[in-house]
Length: 190
Figure (cartoon, rainbow, N blue to C red):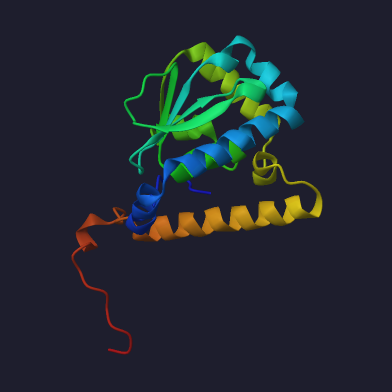
């Protein structure tokens, strides 16, 4: 859990993400969205008319955004420029956005602490929020893995996200005591 922090991905991970081609990620995410729609159609029914809305999800620590249209089996995810037009805009550090999706972070707390920002069609945003909260999604749900393999997938993905959060938190400048930022650490045994 991030506890009122908003660590960004460390620079090496951001560089790696920028260097990857977009089409494989778009293909995998679109397939995952459509697979989820096949397995859990009630989640998409909850969106109602808002399933045709374009949700722009902008990780502030990446150079691109995700355009998501969750229209059941026709749903799609594309990597787009952050300025791309949509109906709803959700912005924040990638790790915080992932925490929203899997329910490990509280969206209201992130919003009121200004870790994430939202704008656009409030009715569509609320429909999406309610659908995600009701879904209680796990990584295996998003990847279409079930049974024992799903349990292993959940554990592995959550461990990886936790590791990234720890790395990101350690790589952020500490502002808890600005008076000691310039003081070098005391060498051990001195």
